[in-house]
Image 1: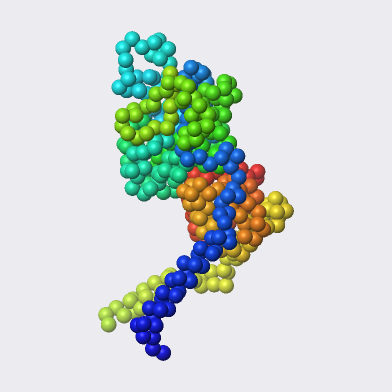
Image 2: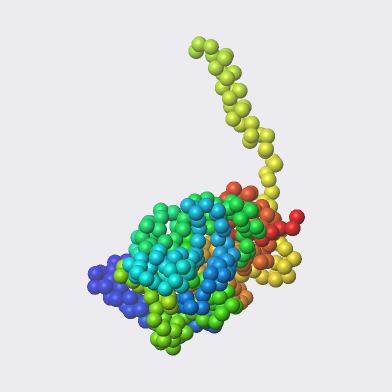
Length: 264
Length: 129
């Protein structure tokens, strides 16, 4: 059977039309199944956090760090050169370089600050990742797909906040004496040797409608020490704090757009 | 042919050695192992999808789950078989019923000589025995 050029074009055009129409009809008849997903915290456009340093003390920071590390099975390696951390403490001078004013209050000079991934609006770690193992979700969380990480550590070089740690060894072989009963949380994986890891704003808890582990731990002691919510929503809790209090961010001049704020 | 006798004897011995494993195990094919179900799995009766599908395609399903859960933040799976919604997680959902990794996962994986690296990171439930 011969099909001439004219007939071929007619058939091609008609099938394209049918294809387009068919897809639209399908979408109209079966609207997004995704809406059924339960998320009591609600979906955000830009998750962010405010750390109120007036309500924080070192013991509370330790509690937050422990809650996070126990939940995510982050072991204490015992060697600062190979340390793995999602949440950690650091001095004012190391946290906010460029703001080392002379004659600071004793409180600020001596108090450690609670640091973690800033979940940047313009994250340099995402730009440099050659495998797209680190990427930015639509809700603003900068998260890692551990299955894709090849351990090149470009992201560690790119991150100006030191938020990323490399697994120099198998975390399950971390010293038993420092990590009794590791892995602590049977519902969360550990990492393997040779991958980078960092804070993920507890994306897996948000999916179940729970606040991040550190926020939950802090809230047990004092209300409003860590305020978590959607920065894109003017009615959200962190936005209310930001309206009322003066806050600073880490190295904003670099243009990464950190989404973690500190009330000092 | 020089030293023909020696060469042919050598060839015969060599061939015999080469074929020895085939004759030795002839008729003794190892039986494919049966995955053992825990009481909890038996009680549930139905897995996320139909059993034949799970037998042949579970690795593809898990692969899709891990991409969708991590990359698309789509962590719930609606079963086409039962219509139930499951949390996409090997460690939390699959291993909750199949808490006998050594008898459910490892038996067949060993038989099929596959060595999935899931367990490098994901934690297998503790088995009592």
